[in-house]
Image (cartoon, rainbow, N blue to C red; front, side, top):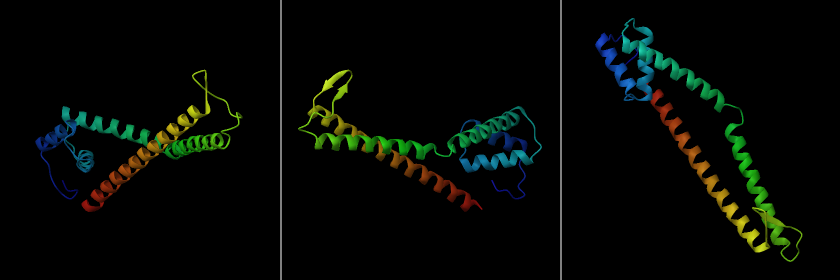
Length: 158
């Protein structure tokens, strides 16, 4: 579809609406269909349903964007994870410096744990945190790639 003077029949528009409802259109094609529906004066049950679905989708996307823009959403999560990792690291280092002293008492599920077990727990938590941070990095890279691909599609279509 091109935004220039292309005329569609009602059957063509209805077919595109059906493809939209069946989730068979790309993001770019959906945007173009929305443009067509805004500028055509056809009316039928499927066309009206598609317009309603697009309005709902647009509203949900705006709400989601506002929620995700909650200023510090992802950075706050990452900062919390880093703080936890730092706390575990400091605890681990403190325990390793005080191996001979019983200055630190650790309880797990209400049971007192010896220093060797505390070290193992701290090491396991540090490993979990590293894995979590790797997953966060992968997700960020994946989202960045999706955004770049979408922007390239938009720029390519212009």
